[in-house]
Length: 114
Length: 110
Image (cartoon, rainbow over all chains, first blue to last red; front, top):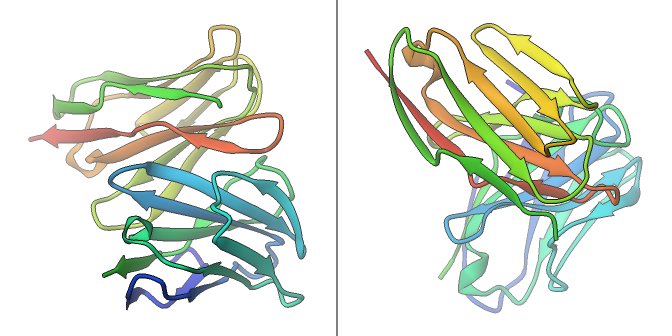
């Protein structure tokens, strides 16, 4: 068990809808990262937050947004969903701000857009 | 955009043999990461390499980084079945954007 909790584990929704994925980092970790994994595009880094502030942004679509709350949990919001958004979404956490140390990954949320 | 290439994409090896997975990247970076993913599972961080010449070892796996050649290697020594998984390398650029390789699917045959 990595100590990173993601909910829900599975999500099935329809095109055009909006969903929220939740991530609770390991106790004491201040950084949260979001990743997308799909057969078409492989693994992609979406966004990183550190102690509530955005620190790095990757290939995150404008329809997607994220935030990190004062209790350090993070949410990834996906809106106007398309079939191509079907993927595994992972979050990870680490103690430090930059990618200098080991990241611990959650089990992932599998999103299916029908 | 930073490009990260791994080879081979698929690797089938016998138990007890040695092999190397290669990770090439396209622009300057001094931060290279290796991950393992078991089928249907999440990712596990293996190594973080932060400088030219960095070498890290854990069990039968050893990772190294040559920033001048823009190359990292993951060397497997005396493979065992438990090492069967997909291995990803990833590189961070100066803007802290993170790019993954395509992955190497390793199967260790008894």
